Length: 83
Image (tube, rainbow, N blue to C red; front, side, top):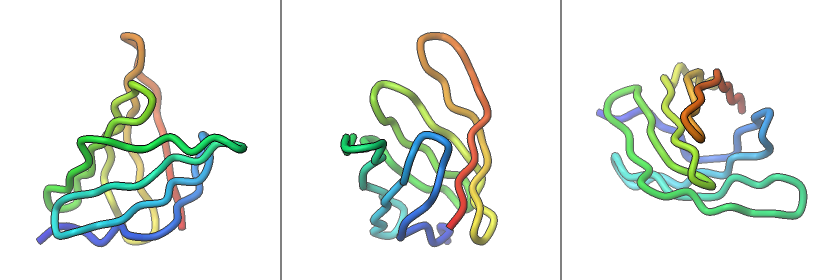
């Protein structure tokens, strides 16, 4: 059963607004006045994956937090979200 991620999350990159339909995830990453749609969003158990602005986000959902890595332009960095 996929984790529940629908709602608003705060990240260093901005606000992540997620919608969830079973294991499919959609939404936007809002940074300032720019809302970037996410694509290829999915959940497998507590693992979330999606793409925003060409960056691939992967993370583990643990209640009201998500922690993982983001890959962009061949580089990897940690990312976190909280609601």
